Amino acid sequence: MKAKRSWKRGVGYASFRMLAIMVLGLWPCAGCNSVLQVETEEDCMGVIQLAISETSFSVMKELAYDTRSVWSKGMDDIDTNDFILSVTTEQGAKVYEGKYGSRPDQMRVVPGTYNIKLRSGEFKKPQFEMPVYGDDRSVAIEKDSTARVTLMCRQTNSAIRLRFTDKFKEQFPGKGLILEDSNGRMLYPYDSQDYCYVLPGPVGLMYNNGISDTLLFSKQLPAQQMLTLNLSYAPGSKSALLKIEKDTVRIWKSENFNVGLKIPTGAVTIDQAKEMIGEKSVMVFGFVLGGDVTENTIRVRRPFSSRTHLLIAPLMSERNRYNMFAVELPSGDIREALNLVDNRDVLGSAIVVTGNIVESYFGYPGIKSTKACTVLY
Image (tube, one colour):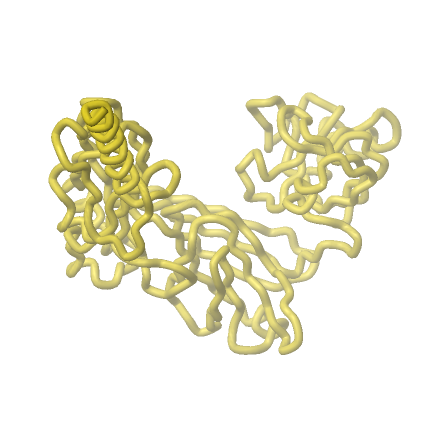
């Protein structure tokens, strides 16, 4: 009997010990600043080894000064050993969180998928002079394997710089505009000449008249994009400019945007319409960008060959297909008046289209069963 109880106790203790090791290796630890390692070599199932690409960091430093005289503040003082490193399980449990320079040479972990995040600093809301560098990786660890991961040093946030014409400031008096990303907002003064850094994703510009906010502009900014936006106010003018420059680190982009182009009452933007799939008789505002649409291509310049549809976008400078709507032109008066084969002046026009929002038209959300199209200017 004693031997039997001893056998049960031994098995139970071993099972409990292994369970405890797994829990310690996977359970989140508030304020944790070290690796949660298994205790013995027998328990070790895999290894993660990390390094930062010295080449990518050197290129980043060399291009801190660039042809646009944009200085990344404090770049000379950046030390990758001070970067914040986070390694978590796929479920979000912390394996390591702390300075990159304090990491273990080998992180011993159980098999599974691990997310690696490296950042030069903490960034939570729009800020001037706050570029953040780092990388994000995901790595799958198998039993008795070693994953050697080389992390890149590249800009992880975006930035926007605003320029205002006198007409714009007369139309929107005050100290400046409100710049908002998904995590917060701040005032961008009219007299500023600097880039304001934001989280990648949707960014909006709002004017506050002391009572309420009015959204003037919204755009999706990818990581590394440095956007200069020239804001003007000229009712009825359709002029627009798009300029994109690329280097090995950032994407530089310049756009003109005329806030005088107002969306008519009752109409929605293309972004809003994408959230209304299945709804009927929706009025959608956009500019006629082109036609001859397939699932993989669009045409934005003459000549056009198809009379059955056209393509609208929020700006004439838009080139992201997901931000455009193909619009069905049914046979009859609508097709005769608006098809781009026979109506050269329609290209570039601001229009309101009334029809049904569908999930797929040429592979993307669009408008079918069009009932009306009104050319505004």
